[in-house]
Amino acid sequence: MPKTLERLHWKDAPDIWAPFIPIIKVKGGTTIYLAGTTAAPMYHHHPHRPEEFESIPDDMEGQANEIMNKIKKSLETAGGSLKDVVSATRYLKNMQDQDVLNKIWEENFGENRPTTTTVEISTLAAHPKLLLEVTVTAVIDE
Image (cartoon, rainbow, N blue to C red; front, side, top):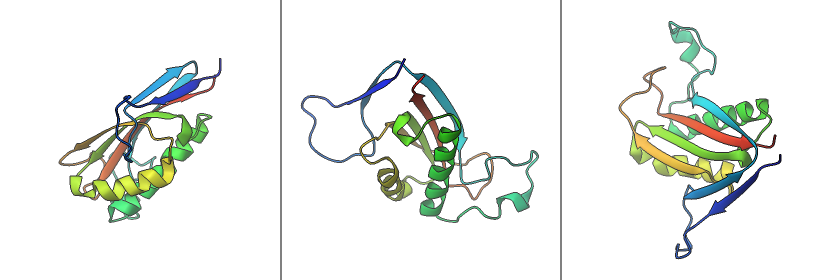
């Protein structure tokens, strides 16, 4: 059964841009859950090997772009694309980086923004250099 995504706003919502859609109604399709994605290599050793993390960008723009590329690749692997994303949780080490992230978000999602929760945290598990982790849920056609 093909899926339909209906992105909804309140009837009295102001006409302003935001990095999220407050409501997405999904009918049909198959749900895809992506693991938390960071700018660290998707596949790395455990215990961690420092040399595997040397290429992590130092700034939010670089890390956000790296994460978006990995999310696209993961979605393509599952048969989807960014247009299929219905929900995302964004974990930032510094909420002041949110405007930079939102710029990258808009460039990648355009009008197909997902519902979004953004949380500031003290650290991320893989490496102290990491500034952001994003989890994603998508719905693709069956």
